[in-house]
Each structure stands twice: as structure tokens, then as C-alpha cells.
Image (cartoon, rainbow, N blue to C red; front, side):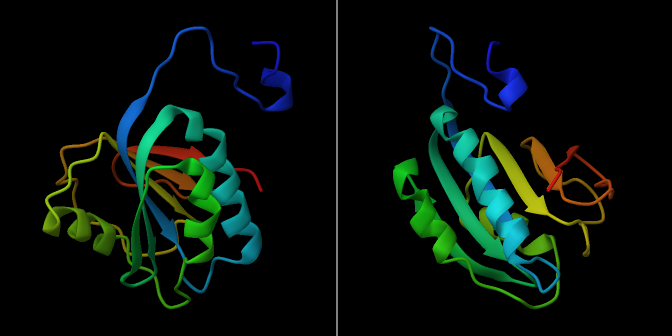
Length: 146
């Protein structure tokens, strides 16, 4: 608790690890380098709690899909992020379904400018991390300050 004022959440003596986490990074044309850098920083902050993460970059389709088991190499995964087109939030959900992957949690890092799924059809928790004031139609929406 001593470091919360510095935006650092340090682990306690107890160890809690989350299993497979899927992360979709919005790489559409409305996302700039500042947002991508902020997204990478947020993921680095929680990396101590993650055993394995699937990182997908997505604009109107999934541009890259990478499994990262060593968060020390996460920076390399961020460098491979591709995109720049329109925005649809549907492809990452479809990609996980196609690959028969059920993560413990799904995190979508985005500005919220795009086409949302019409209804919640997944059986895993979804966290939308938004750089704007938008609110997702399902899951938990968290506002991110840049």
C-alpha cells in the first residue's frame, strides 16, 4: 500500500497468478503512438500476475496473434503490432472462438471508436480499457488517462 500514491501496486508476500489472459490492442487509424505506448505500459504493470498472455493487434481484422509466455519479451510483441485501418471489435472474439481458446480474462485496449458486438456471447470476463469516455455494452469499462 505504500506505493499506491506513485501508481505502483507491489505484490504482497502471497502470490497470485492469473492463467491465460487474452489482450486485444486496437491498432486502428484513430490510435496513435501515445495510446500504444500507454497500452504497453498498462500491460507491463500487471505482467507479474500473468503466466501467459495472447496479444492480438486488431483494426477491422486481427492483424497479429502472438502468445507471450515471458513478459520480458512483451516489448517485442508490441513492436509487431500492425494495423491502421477501420475499427471492429468483433474479430478478436471470433479469433478466440475459432482457435477454441477460453481465456480467464479478456482485455481490450481501445479508444472505443468502433463496432461493438451486438450482444455478449462469450463466457469469460471482458475488461474494456478506454482512452475516451465511451462505455462498452457489456463487460467492465475502465477509463484510462493518457
